[in-house]
Image (cartoon, rainbow, N blue to C red; front, side, top):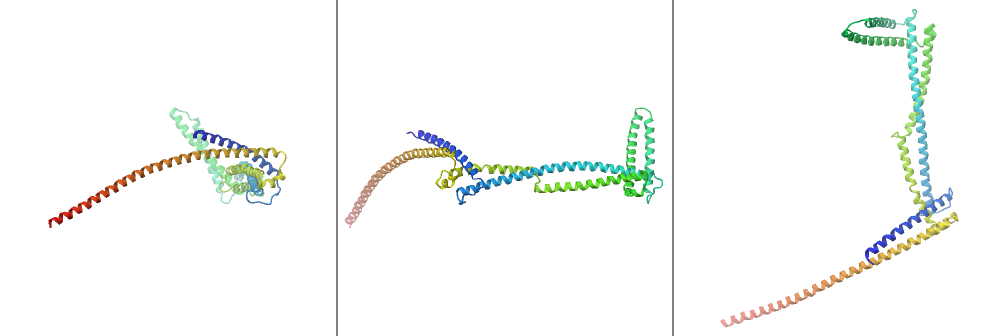
Length: 377
C-alpha cells in the first residue's frame, strides 16, 4: 500500500477514534454527574486518596463549596451596594434638608437681629451692631436715592452709556450693603437667639423660631453622622480598592473557572463506574437507566481500542517499510565500501609490487657500486 494512502488511513482512523472518545466522554460525564447527585450529602466511601470514588467525591464537594461561598459573597456585596445606594440617597436628602434648615435658621437669626435692633430698649454691650446698622442703612438710602436719580436722568447716547455704567456700580454697592446689613442682623440674632425667655414680642417669637430650627438641625446632624458612619463602615468592608463591582466580577470569574472543572470530575467519576477499581463501590448507586449508558460506553471503548490497534498495525507496516528501506540503504553502503576496499587492495598490491621492484633496484645499484670500487683497486 502506498505511503500516502496509509497516512490517509491513519488520519481517518484518528478522526473516528477522537469522535468515539468525545461521545464516550459525554456519556460518562452525564453518568458521573447523575451518580454524584444520587450520593447527595452521604459519606458512603472509606477510601479518600488517589483516583477513587471517595477522593473524587471530596474534590467535587470542595468545588461546590467554593461556588457556594463565592455566590454568598456576591449576594452580600449586592446587598451592601443596595444599602450603600439607599444610604447615599438618604444622606443626599438629609444634606438638602440641612441646607434648607440652615437657610431658614439664618433668616430667623436675621429677623431676630432686626427685631432686637428696632427695639429701643435693646442694648448690646458695645453698641457696635446698632452703629453698623445705622451706617449701612444710611449707605443703602444713599444708593437708592442715587439709583432713582440715575434712572430719571436723560441725555444722548454717551450719557446713556455712562448712566448704565453708574447704575451697575450703584446696584452692586447697594447689594453689597444690603448683604452686609443682613449679616449684622444675623450676627446679633445668633448672639441672642438663646435668650428667648428674656425677650418678648416679636423678638421672643423670632428667638423661639431660631431655637426650633437649631433643634431640628441638631437632630438632623446626628442623623447625618449616623448615616455617614454606616456608609463609611460599608466602604471599609469593600477592601482597599473600594470597588465592589470589581470584586463581584472577580468572584463571578472565579465561579466560572470552578464550574469549568466539573466536567472533568464528572468524567473521572463516571469512568470509575466502568473500571474494576470503582465498579463495585458505585454499584449500589446504579439504576436501571444506567445500563444502556454503560453498554454504549463499552461499545465505544471497544471501537476506540480497535481503531488504536488498526493505527498501530498501519504504523508497524510503515515502520517495516522504513526499516526495509534502511536495510537497502545500508546494503548499498556496504557494497560501496566493499568496492572501495577492492580498489584499495588493488592499490596496495600495486604499491607493494612497486616497493619490491624499487628495493630490488636498490640492491642491484649497491652491487654495482661495490663491483666498480673493486676494479679500481
